Length: 58
Image 1 (cartoon, rainbow, N blue to C red):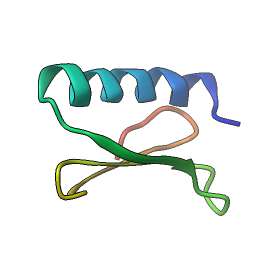
Image 2 (cartoon, rainbow, N blue to C red):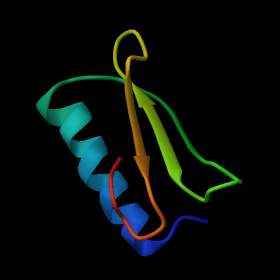
Image 3 (cartoon, rainbow, N blue to C red):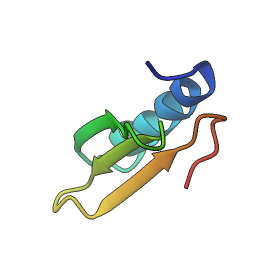
Image 4 (spheres, helix red, strand yellow):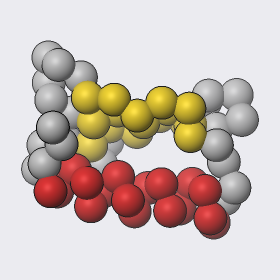
């Protein structure tokens, strides 16, 4: 289950991807090893984000 900080970062990134730069989101999941939230996006799946448990976007 994502933390509140991760959910806030996820909302911000999803908004920017879909409404500002019109890129599709292909995958959102949590890495069981690190508990980071992982986002894969872009026309050719070339955009990657990780959001740490404390909300930092990598």
